[in-house]
Image 1 (cartoon, rainbow, N blue to C red):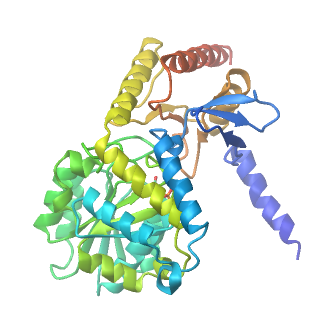
Image 2 (spheres, protein in one colour):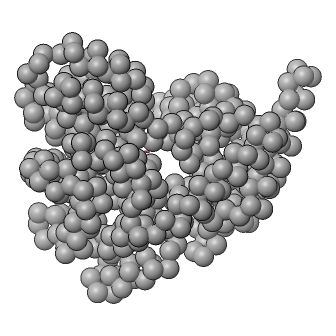
Image 3 (spheres, rainbow, N blue to C red):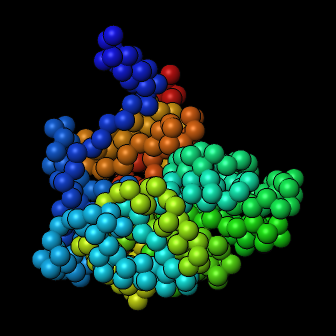
Length: 404
Ligand SMILES: *Cc1c(COP(=O)(O)O)cnc(C)c1O
C-alpha cells in the first residue's frame, strides 16, 4: 500500500481549495514585541505580528520572566511526573489557589493547555453524570466539541448566542436529566460577546449547570482580569469557568474553576488530567505571577482598548469594512480562501505585516478573513502602516474586480 500517495491525495485537495496551512516561521524577539524575526526567505527579516494571542505582551513582561527564571533555577526544568505520581509541585498548588481567587470560586484545577482542560472536563462531566445532556452553542471551540463527542453524552446544539433557542431546547428535555450549558464569553473568530446574563438566567430557570469558556477574555476583561463574567458581576452564578494561561497571560496551560466537589470530581476521573506529565513548575510559577500581575494592573488593558479603538477608527476612515463587535478582535472579511491567503502573503512580503489568513475549517467556507489583534505594544505608527497597506491593497483588489 502506498500510504504517502493516500496522504498526498488529501493534501492536494486541501491545496486546491486554498485551505492548505502554511506556518510562518518566526523568532519572537523579547523586548521588541510585536516585532519578530522572520525565518522565511521571501519576507523581510523583521515583521510586525498582528495576529498574536499574547494580547497584552505579557510573554515578555520583565517581572514574569524573572519569576520564571528563578523557578527554573530553584526547581529545574520539568515537573518529573504526573500530578499523581511525584509531579505536584507547590507552584501548581499556588497557581490553582490564585485561579480560584481570580474567579471567586472554591477551587481550580490545572491542565497542560486550555484545549486539554475543555476536552477533559467536558468529557468527564458529560460521561460520568448519568443521562447528562450537553447543550452546546453552535460556534463553540473545537476543544469543547471534541470533549462533548468523547463524553458520548446526548448533545443538543443551540443557535449561536440565542438564549431563546436555548430556552426552547432546555424545555424540551426531561426535567430530571442533568443538563450542561456550554458556551464562550468572547468568540475569537467574530469577536462577539455572548449575552451572558440572559444565558445564565435561562440555565438557572431549567436547573442546568453553566460551563463557560473565558479563554479569550481572562486577563483582558473585568477589573481584575477575571473575564466577562467578572465584568458583568456574574461569575458567582456560573458553575464552571474555564480559561487558558497561554493567551493574555503569556505562558501556557489551561484550567477550570468551580466548586471544590466539582474540581475534585474532574481531578479524580479525567483521563486527560491524570495520565499526563504536569506543567513545568517554572511555567506554573510564571503563570501565577502573570495572573496576579493583571489582577493589580489595568494599564495594559487600557492601552489595548485604546489601540483597538484607534485601529477601528482608521479602518473606518479608509472605508475598509470590519466586523463591528464589542471585543478586542478585529476581523476584516475577505470571503475567499485564495484571496485571503494572497492578501496575507503580500502583506508579509511587501509590508512586513504578519497576519495569518483564517480559512476553513477554523471558520465556515465563504467567511475567510484576516483577524487583527492590536495590543498595548503596537504603536500608532504601526497601526497607520497597517491601514496604509490595507487601503493600497483594497484599491488594487477593487480595480482587479472592475477589470475582471
Ligand atoms: C485557544 C482556545 C482554547 C484552547 O486553549 P489553549 O490553551 O490554546 O489550548 C480553548 N477555547 C477557545 C475558545 C480557544 O480559542
